[in-house]
Amino acid sequence: MQVTDNAPAITGEHRELLDQLLDKWSLHVLDQLCEHGALRFNELRRAIPAVSQKSLTAALRRLERNGMVERLVVNDRPVAVEYRIAPVGHSLQELIDALLRWTTTHLPEVERARAQFDDAVA
Image (cartoon, rainbow, N blue to C red; front, side, top):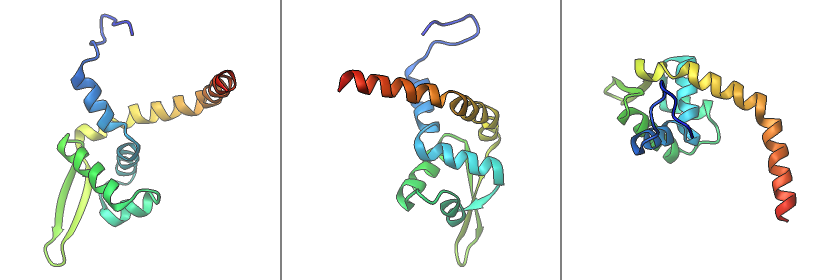
């Protein structure tokens, strides 16, 4: 990939962060929290029905560690925790929306390329 004057070179740190932000479940979590604001764990699970408890926990911890999500204890007994998008995480909303629009626009082209490749390899 060519580096332009206003685009930094892709480093290991860039790859690591992007891998963590754009992985399967983190992208869903970011999207839900940007759309709905604060959600409890089980509300997130209901909003993302295919995610397991273990995968959702891992995604939330990654996002919290990277400063994208804030974890708030809202009740001690019984313990209740809410997750909300942090300001830096919210700044990703336009980028996520742009990626989703790009995917929607170009998915048919990608699927054709995949089919051609698979036919050629088979």
